[in-house]
Amino acid sequence: MIRFFKSADGGQPYLAKLAGLLFTFILFFNSPVGAEPEGISMDSRAFQHGINFVQRADDQWLLVWSSSGNPPAGQNRKGNWTHDVYYSLIDTQKLVIRPNRLISKLEAQEPSSSAITEDGNLMITMEDGWDTKQNVAQRYAVYDAVMKPIKAYPQLVQDGGHSGHVAAVNQRFVVFYSDEWVHGGGVDNLGSGDDVLAKVYSSRGELEHTVPIAVGVANRDWWPLVAGSNDTAMLVWQRFVDDKTWSVLMMAILDPETGQLQQKPIKIASRVKYYTYSVAYLPRLKRFLVTGTHKNGEGFAHMYSQIGDPVASLEKLPPVMREAQIIQRHSDGKTNAVQAIEPAGIMVLSVTADNLALQETIEGTQKWSTAGTDGIFIDENRLFLVGLSQSGLQQQLFEINPAGKKN
Image (tube, rainbow, N blue to C red; front, side):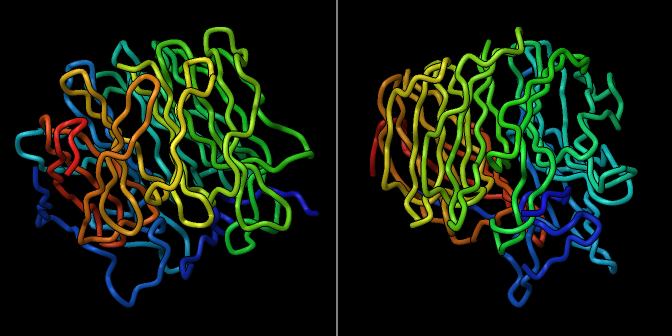
């Protein structure tokens, strides 16, 4: 077995990331959107990769994503990815996306991941191919409420780090990232990450703790995701299984204040499709929710307490889409968790503090890509969902039944 650094998330080495690899209705907007163009087989992530809606302290929504232009151009003539990081304020009455380039350097800054602390500061972290010693680096920047830099890009999480995601826990940020690469196995036999680590930062981007989560030669761990409650962070990642084409899903609970693990790494799911899982914190219920898809195409959802105790589980769900964020609705004392599903449309879960149930599925006419989806509720029943694609931002508006009501 050969261990060396290589780019992340199932791609080739960074400088040669080659492509080739009630009622319901949906409204489609006339911006550069649409299904994947027919006849194009490029990896959608070469065009756009990484998207988040984050809510500011003034309750306005901010959309942050990585893209090779708007509309995206894809890889350059050398086969390299060229993403920059963009943002747009979202007026929920008009739903117009106006891309503002925020971070731009040679090579790619992707996938972007964003979070806002309770005092209103925004952190964006991304895998970065510009000016590194080890092909890529995990970097970050911190901005205030008016997008003025507090810690201007480029700030270094780790040279050689990759695939990082960020969550806010009260007035701290937790960046969960992977390190190194192991050749062989994984998607298209391209390999896997090796270790996963967390770094805790103040809301102004000052490093407080570095926490090894799963490191060493015994296991191969990668694609780390994180969600934050008021005082803990749930860390979720995939673990390589020899001679298998699926992964084991792992979980740990971190106390960012002390930098200590409240729950050491444990297995929470098996036979999981590579990269196809998500995690979110449901503040009204004080629960963490993990969703994903098994290798056989069946979806699942597991709910946990803030300290990682299992609370409820649901199997045989529709298959969730790769890199689809979990979207929440709280209405009339009831909670829904909504997520994009394969190949199109969404599923709606009804969630209580101790139970999970499938409320409904809603069909879509545009296929999602693997590059990322996220959304927001613009009123009690309408969900605005944005997906990344080869042709640009796919924008869809879904009408969803009131919480707890099935078709």
